[in-house]
Length: 393
Image (cartoon, rainbow, N blue to C red):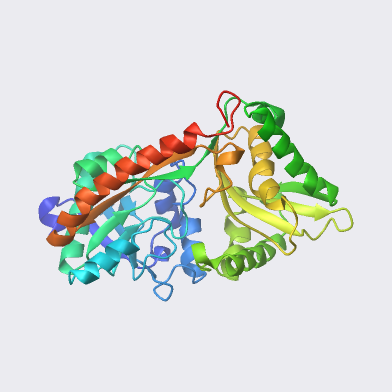
């Protein structure tokens, strides 16, 4: 029992974040660098029926209280599949089936459908982070064993938090994202200057291709965003998912996007492509979030096939806006085939894993270590081929 471990604490498992006062949750979440653990974002996912038991994302949040004060929380989900995570463990599930182990459900810590680094336990300032983390992991272990959960997995973890979990015996698995870093740029020309001559010409050509068809990318943020753009962004998102559904699933509902206008538009920036003939209705648009010095690309779409519009809306216009607004890093989202050619180096990120079946653990722990070594080699190989002026293209 938790009371025997630390009598002054009480633990409560929550299946609906709405049961937790927003002020109490955000007192822990707002100081973090990531926007994706804040109450409104997580609440919108649940209330819009995007992250629910029906979609395979059953909220199962862990909260730690001292008297009536929330001092720690972990956004967690019981998963009946591995879709929407962007960390691909389906082979583990196949292995588990072959050896007679039930892999699903599993307990997962991440923001649903959001492959952006920053997941961690939310712990109040002034608390002993190691002690609180140990209490919460003890409760997670107990929960998983009692309910025959195969494993607990934390994805896209905060790099400062990872050592605490490794001390708790979690196995780290290295992956990579593509993240642009602001190298002290004052304008877009400074960004272009880091590339070799061939790639500078290519980027300029791609931006001019959008201009030639009479389109202009317009960034719009916060209260300046017309309410109509939020349901329109859902249409773009849905259309893109329908076209390229092999890499993800269409989880987010129209209601989710509409709720963002009500309670989260202060974090939103749209990059809308308007034509000279119609300056009210964009033909394409990308959706980003920002907090502090970080910008995150989430979704994009266009109802017309326009040469290079994707590159401009998802990379160049956000980078130009980021430089003008003091943003220091820009994670454009999942995938990487196009990103490395446009100044997004491969950046390491980690997931953390614990298995409650001994046979599964004995097989997968050494396997994860081997894969991590190979992943490090891949990161180095990718970054050795970036088209920068001080490298061979």
